[in-house]
Image (cartoon, rainbow, N blue to C red):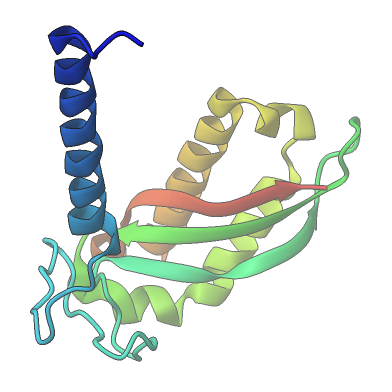
Length: 166
């Protein structure tokens, strides 16, 4: 048998060091438990972090209002899909107007349901169709709020948090 050449020994040693270093990196980054009592970093816009992991009654984002999810909104006839399940969140222009938005939630829900029902499923398949629906909803909701002398309680943005076509 031939002895090990120095080149092979060096290669094996380098590979062994790399494997050990990778193992240590995985342990440090992913497997190690966080230090007890470590205070989590709170991102900008987030009011507080719930340490128990349970939901709190206080909203995390003061400028975002979640609308109760919609089940099976019937779409405009003319396609393979007949309905959509939808969940939406509204970003407010002024966070202080949250109560006014929540007080008008019934009319906002009606606007979302009727406007979405006027949409064809083929429009909702594309990103452009979803964007067009989003912009139409923002415009109609803001018009409704302005008609009720709540122009300050406008909607800045609308987020589809769940959209399932059936």
